[in-house]
Image (cartoon, rainbow, N blue to C red; front, top):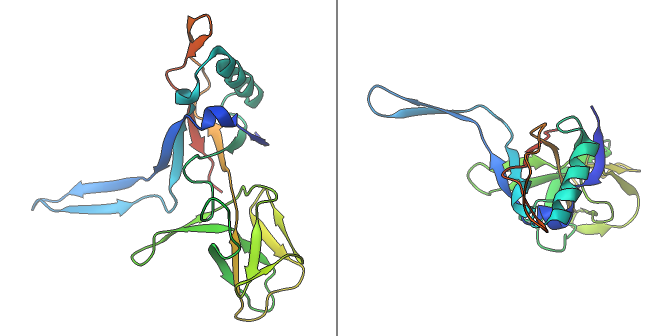
Length: 206
C-alpha cells in the first residue's frame, strides 16, 4: 500500500459529483423525540468520477489510471472543483489561522475552518499544492524562513514565531483519495463513446 503523489485527470474530475459525508446515529425516543450522536470527528468525502467521463479517450485515461493504482490499493490526489482553496480563487496569506507562536514551536499544520460562531469545523489539509502556499505572521506575509511539506501539509519555520504571534496561511489543495472499488464496469455505447455507471472514490483521512 502506498500513496502516489499524482492527480486524477483534471478535466474528468471537474465533471464529477460528490462531497462531504458524516456518520450520525439517530435514536427515536419513546416520547417521539430523538437523540443524536456524531460517530465521526472528521467528515469524509466521497466522489463519483463516472459523471466526468464523456468519451472513449476519457475512459482510456481512467482505465490506465485505475490499473496503475491497482484498484483500491494505492491512494492519489483528487481536485475537488468546489472546495480546493483556503479562501477565494487566489489564496491570501491571512486566509486561515493555523496557530499561535510560543517562542519554541516551529511546526504548524495547515487547516481550513468551516463555519463561524456556532461550532466551526477545523479540517486538516494534508495535500497542499506546491507553489500555492503563502504564510503570514501577525498579519504580515513572510516570504522566507519557512517551508511546507506537500505530503503532510506541515509548515516548518527555521526560527520559532514569537510568543503570542498569530500564524496564518493561504493555499490551494488536493484531497487524498483512493478508488472505492476493485472493478470497473465499462459499457461501450458508440464509436467514440464510453459510459461508466460509477467510479466511486473515497477520501483517505490523515
